[in-house]
Length: 526
Ligand code: GDP
Image (cartoon, rainbow, N blue to C red; front, side):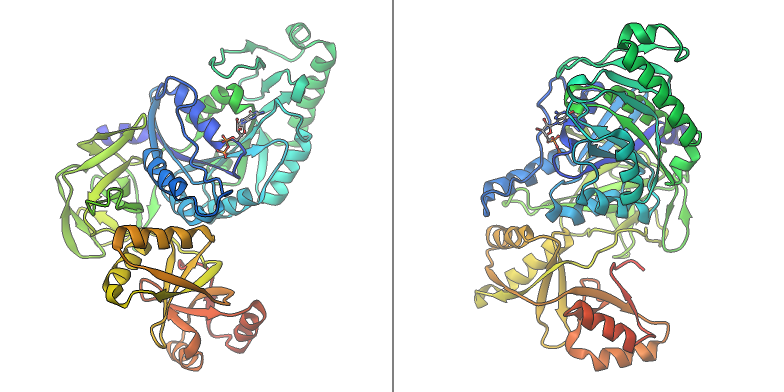
């Protein structure tokens, strides 16, 4: 039963946060515990600092770094942990959303000074779409932050999820004394240390133990007793199933940069976070322990080396065992496909692998056959659900600047879109091409890469568009009528799905009222 054992010991998750809350720092500490790195400072932030507008070096560096840190695999306490990196910059939010489809759970980092920030809210919405279990880590307790009760209320309110503290901070900022684990019933005293790994903590069998006074002083000891009583009274008993179904987020407190509360987080994480779970395809639910391999592509990195048009496609193994060199079925293309060059990402090193198990992410060297969302199987014709496109926020029309390079432009655009850099909409009328993105930065990336990787040049002309809405209707005739009457505003997305390009919110509302038989969707998955 090798398959079942391999599944049981895997945890595949992502860390999400608003930029600057401490995602990179926490990642690094987790890797330290996993022995995947030896020194602090080894994990580079994949943040793009947007001070200089066209900082190409930064963008190129970002691409390099994000391949290296896309997936970090390490072993801890007999568990194989796959940590998927998510770009923090909001302009790369789509990339993050897609990565979240490949994880089984999420750790959300919240800055105790700033509380719940806007990017955290958006990411949480994505987690809710698939009921992904979430653990919260409230970070930077060494700073004068907000009242912990207030923070918990804010999480519940803004993120629309119930919380259950499993640890509790004693003091804060300069007076930060440590954390009491409500889960393990022991006390960790705080020492600021950027390099040391924290020890086991002091065991407290019950809160009346005089050890508490000895360690914390009378005032803090009493305060802790009161807090614990209050918490146990207010919050119901922690039920791991409620966490697994995405209803309750357990909360931990700590300070990532000081490596404090991180081990506790990790120890609890491996105990409660889900092993690879079953996943939905268009046709049926596939369990990870089914003997036949299946998986889906959630990320593509193209043209890392301009001299070789190679790409790495990241596949999440969902069921069975993946084997290098074996022939698989590429469902969309309906053809056989085989990979001899397969990498896994262990301890930040890329290494050739021969096999991978459910929960694992491997990189497939591909010459252009694979797209984001593609499913590979051992023959079954089924497609994994769950790589949605969201309506972009910024739209610009593509203007070809060099008529001699039209072919290159089209090829470049289509490949970049396959990589998921942005979305392309082609108007039914006049075949005008419109690129939609969530952030302004993407347009610069596209222009730069078209030029350097494809030798094509284009301009972008701003368009006054509010949303791209995917349209459908139970009544095919009504849909046809709608398309006819709004022909000038109808486009197709990259998969040929019909999209209504709405110019303003009020106009969209009006159109929705006038055509009640038409369903308007803000994501491509419906
Ligand atoms: P990311 O943008 O979420 O990846 O955030 P980083 O990990 O890069 O952290 C942002 C800043 O917060 C850095 O300067 C970190 O050193 C700092 N930081 C991270 N954790 C802590 C903490 O526990 N306490 C304090 N005071 N600063 C922290």
